[in-house]
Image 1 (cartoon, rainbow, N blue to C red):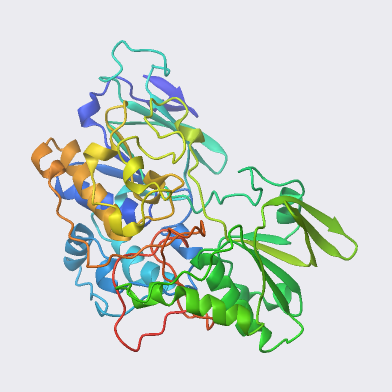
Image 2 (image 1 turned 180 degrees about the vertical axis):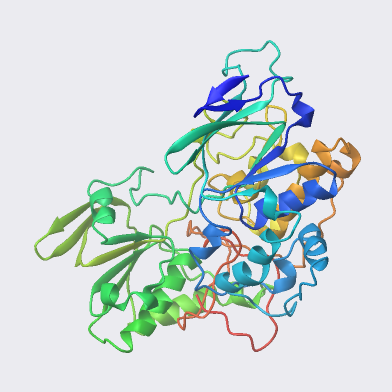
Length: 462
C-alpha cells in the first residue's frame, strides 16, 4: 500500500477487480459506461468539467442529424428504466437539447451517477510500477492514473482505460505550419481571437460593428459566418472577411444523395457573390500582428486586415500529453490508431467510405487501453456519432472477453452517410449551413456531423 495525498492507494488488488476507467463524460464516454455495465463490468467515469462539457461548448448549434442518430442503444436501455421519455426521433436537437434531454438524464441514472467523478482532470496514465521501457510483468500490471481535483492530485488504479475525452479542448492553431502563429497566443489571451464555433449572437458587444475575420473552410466556419451575417442585420457597419487556404470552394455535386452537401457550393457562392462576406483564398497564416489600427494577418502572399476580431474555425487535434508513458500505436500523420488511420485519412477518404470499426482497429500495443470517440480519429475531421457508439460497444465486448461480439459489426450506416470537414479540400464533402445560422454540426464537437439526411422542408443553416 502506498500513499497519495495522505490517502492509501491499494497496490496489491488484482487488476481484474479494479474498475474500467472511462475518461470523458460526453456522448461516447457515457455510452461506454452503459455498455460496460451491461457486460457486468464496473466503469468509473472521470470528467475534467461537467457532464457533456464538450457539447456545451456548441450548445447554440442545431445538428444535421435527427435524434434517432444521436442516441446509443445501451444508454437508451438504461434510461428506459427511469421512465425517461425519448425525444421525437425525427427532430433535430441543438447541442443544449442533446445535453439537457439525453446526457444529463443518462448521467443521473442510479447506475451511472455513483460512478461519475466530475471536475477531475486526468494528468497522466501509465502502468503501475512500469515506465514505458519496462517489459517484465507489464501486461499483468494495472493502469495507474494521476488525476487532479481542485489542485490536489491522487492516483487511481484501473483494469483498463477507455479514453473518450474528445478533442474540443485542443483546437488547431492558425499557423499554417501546425503551430501557433506569432502573436496568436497573445490575441487569444486578450479576447480578440476565438476558436471553434463561438456563439457570436450571444456576444454582440464583441462582434457588432467590428471587422471580423473568420478562418477555415469547413461547416464550422460557415456556421460562424452565418451567425455574423444575422448579427450584421442589426449593425450594418460589421465587416466580414472569410479566409481559406484553398480556392476550389464551389464544387457541389448535383447528383449527391445528400441535398445539404450537394448545395454546399451554391450556398457558399451566394453568400460571397451577394457581398455579405469578403472571400480571401490561398491564405496560409504566418503571423498575427496587433497594431493601433487593428490586427494585421500576414500570409504567404500578402496581408489581411486590419481587423478587430478573429475566429479560428480550423478543426481540432487530440491531446496526447497524458498518454506519454503508454505504448501507443498511432499513425504519425493522422494520430489515430494504426489500423484505423488508413480507413479515415481525409487525404484519401470521405465520410462515405469510412467503414464501421471496433476494438480490433482501436487496439494499441498497450493491451486494455483504447482511444474512443472523436479522440480516436486523431486529426481526421470525419468522425460520426453512431460510429463512436459502435466503437464502445465493441470495446466493452472485448474487455468482457466476448471476442466474437467485439469483432461483429452491429452498425448499419444510413444510405449516403454524412460527414464534415474543416480542411476545405476539393475531395472532402460535407453539409454546409445556411446563412441563417439555425443549424450545424453534431456530437462531441463542432466539426462533427452524425449520420442521416433531412426531411423535406427542414432548414439547415451553417
